[in-house]
Image (cartoon, rainbow, N blue to C red; front, side, top):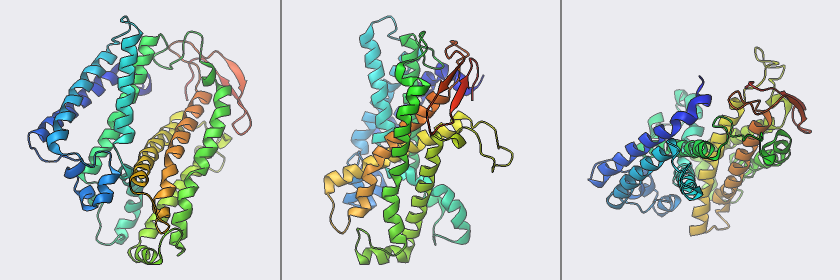
Length: 383
């Protein structure tokens, strides 16, 4: 069976094992072992001075205090994940279910969104860029290893663990609330807001917001690449021109703008059926996961990066000569939430009948202008 059908059965155990493993690292750090990747142990943040430490939620953390906290949290998380995997609380009243669900959601948000900073986005975004530019010696004196330091890898691991906690919580709620463990629908089919017609309405708004927001950031980076000192000093502009920083920023901004255009596929016909200009794929249905998985990942990355800039602005403020370096990024959480909602709406609108519970009887449903029009759904079909 495919992973997307079996994950509710094993995700809780996998999350428990991963949490316990990370807790073991906390024991190592508490005992003075090397590699503590937060706060004072993060050489990259320390080298950046006050700005670097302010960028991280754990900027003041030390191994002496952080190690034991991580160890205790890892053990507690492992126990909670095992309890959720076993469906503990199903017969113990609503209070236990709420406690475990709340613990899972808070853990997922803290690990995947609050603790990580912009560097996870940097690694993901610049990996394809460096793959093209490094063979030609740009940036000079740089290697890919400079991009993937241990603190950055650690943040990526935390994001992955946070996603695992989110999946564990979803599986647990389905298991203990009487809904289908595979599709999440109840015996009555589906909640009103999750119907295809409803998702098409609110998903359209979310998609257009997710499309427009990245251009706030892109406008400043394109301006700098063109030699326009928008929101920065002339001296800073020249410095960026000399070291190639504005070219790299404009490239990243262009990638974001390109992703924004692709976001429109979540409400357009070419986002459901490959267009005719794509040889070998033309006329075939776009797999749902091909659209939703990248969108969900980007939503997480831009949200966590945007929250970092929100913290920086809140703690340090902005000036007339520096507002463009931080303020445009503070709208990224809006971008991330909107993109995540747009991806969810796309999934709800396109999902077919469930082969496990039988929900999703054959019907034709008008999903509104801007989408692929009429969509036929039958039980047992998947995309």
